[in-house]
Each structure stands twice: as structure tokens, then as C-alpha cells.
Amino acid sequence: MGSIRAVVVDPSAARGRLALKDVARPAALPFETLVRVKAFSLNLGEVRRAQTAEPGWRPGWDLAGVVERPAADGSGPSVGARVVAIMGSAGSWAEEVAVPNLALAELPDSVSFAEAATLPVAGLTALFALEKGGALLGRNVLVTGASGGVGIFACQLARHGGAHVVGLVRRSERARYAHEAHAHEVVVGENLGGAERFAPYDLILESVGGKVLTQALTMLKSGCGMCVLLGASSGGEVTFDASRFYLTGGVNLFGFELNEALLHTPGSVGLSRLVQMLDMGVLRPRIEVQRPWQETATTAHELFHERKIAGKAVMLVE
Image (cartoon, rainbow, N blue to C red; front, side, top):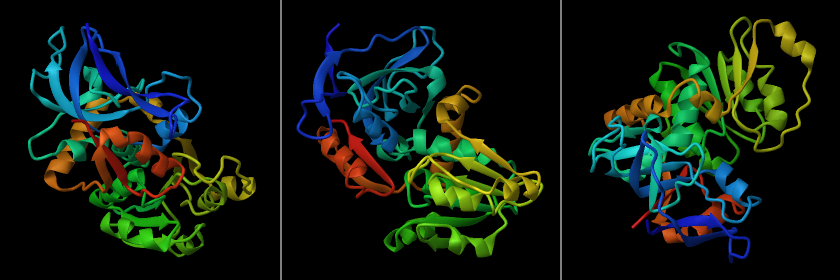
């Protein structure tokens, strides 16, 4: 059956507990397509997990590549097709992967592998989270973490949907990323004080947690406001005034988790929509770093420990 190379967790590795090693070539199930990986992007969640995962665990959710062997049941794309995919069980940081057909979408020639590789986790999270707020036309939307991978896509998608978009970034040098993502207003700071003047909000996409989440819950519009919680980068413990929240009336706090969302809407559906918007120029990923995949461990260290990277880091598999 042979072997391929993949990035695996190795506690003895010089940096980031990650090393490039030989592993068994994947065996595709009848409903899976064998894909030769051309590019993948890094997400903070998988890099964080690699810090504590058991030896041999293989990170990776995002990938783009070329079909090497079609699914045996005939349900997927043909050999040579260009595709983007999300690996729900991880393992995309490799030369080849077996992908369920419900987790991939075909790519037009106009979309590069590097661009496509940014879409799965960040793009699907932004797309599905925004849909929790319903129709966006004429709505007021706040996106925290607006200079990150999810935030940049969320600002663009919300603006395309007709919303008035306010983005929060922590540092002034990253404000331009939110502006480039077409946010109407950009607020800079460690909290939402500057965003209060644009309140109330129909929809808030919140990924910071802590004091920011506390403030966000007070800025929802009565009768329809929803805060979709995507993460808690500044801390998971939150104290808020419960009476102020429930007395607003008709507002909701929704915990979003991508794998749970994919149980209701296949990745293939969301990815097809994102690819179409990328092809049309509606979406424009911000690729901050693009390097050979042999540098994955170093890049992951910069992303997780040094927090040098905004937007997306893409690794090219040669």
C-alpha cells in the first residue's frame, strides 16, 4: 500500500511538537475521494490541540488539492478535478487524504489552491454563524475579532448580505484588515466601549469572551437580537448582569460549534457557496503567510505562541 508524508504530533520535535514523518497511505471508503493535497491552511484550534495531543495525532482540517482516485460508489468528482475540503476528523496536513464526498466541493480554475485552502474552517464558520441571524439586509451586525480568519470572512459576507457592519480589532495596526474586509465602522480596543455608539445590534458574532462578551450581551436589539458565540480567546469565564440581559426581551445567546453545524448542513453545500462567492470576487481571503509545508512547525509556532499572524497562514505541499 505504501506510505506518504504527513505532519504528526511528536513531543520530541524541536518546535511546536510537530514533525514531518512517513505514515500509511490512506485507504478510502466507497463514499470517499482520494485527494492529492496541494495546499492547507492553519487554524488556531488545531495548533492549540497539538500542544497536548497524544503522540502520532495528525492535525489538519482545511485542504485543497486534486482528485487522485474518485470514490468507488461514483458519487464524487472525477480524477483530476480540483477540489476544496474539510476534514472533520483532522489529518489534512499530509500529501494525500481520503475525504467524504459530503465534505468537498469542486474548484473553478480561477480560484487558486492557496485561496481555496483558507475557506473550510474560517469560511464555513463565518457563513453558518451569520445564518443564525436570518436575513441580513438592513441589519446591524457586530463582528469581534474582525482581523482574524473568521472575522475577515464574516465582515465580507455580512456586507454582501446587505448589513451595516461594525468590526472590533484589538490593535490599531490591524484596523486596516477589517476596513479591507468592507466593515463600515472599525473599533479598536480591548473592549466594546467604542462599539456602543453603533448599538443596538441585530446580530453579534463574538469570539473574544470575557469582558467583551459581557458588553456584547447588553448591546442586542430587543425582540430579535442574537449573539453567536464562536470562541473565547481572552478567557472562558464571564460575569454578566442577568437581569439586564433577560429584561432586554427576545434576545438570544447561541453557542456555535462547526462540527455540530456540519451535522445539519454538509460541508459540500457551504463550500460550494463560498467557492462561488470567491469566484465572483465577493470574498477575498487575507493570506498573511504562504510557505512550503516543510515549515509547518515554525509557522504554527508563530501563529500560536507569538501571535504574529493575522488572517490566514497557508502551507503549500510540493
